[in-house]
Image (cartoon, rainbow, N blue to C red; front, side):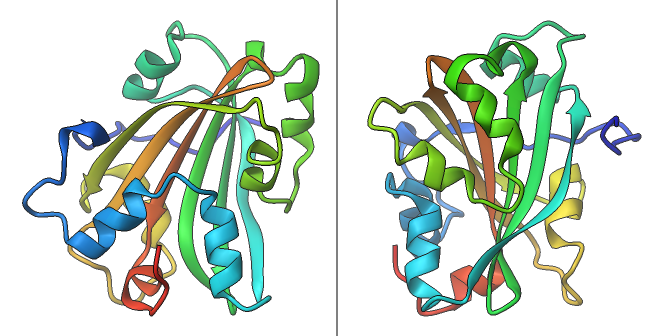
Length: 192
């Protein structure tokens, strides 16, 4: 099944997280973006057991231009694209888009295609050989496609949402995880 993106993509400007905090990024949000621990584990702990993953879509598709560059993919390379919401008390806290190149779905990484509602973070961080190779952050505005997908459930849309993407190496294969931090998470008492 192909992924449902039919219009041209507006992509945000991605910044290497090591470059420091941009002036328009609140300190509290920056702490979330910098946190190198399992985001799933942090949100689960803060939810006091009322955490779950809702799969928005899982389909074969192509990476966006900047995603192809970071994954070093050709323009026609297929990826398994998994989009989920991390929920606390039924309210989305994080929107995540994971890209697993077809060539990465071999060996131990094959199990990533079968996650269903299991959190990806639980699998990645359970393996001591998983490596975080690169982290970038971006400010998503209404003109960016992932802003639309991530905030679709909100009655009142924020001016922007911040997110990060991380290139992981799992079972020797590259996996790209985008995470957009939603207002419920950032306005709560959760602390990274």
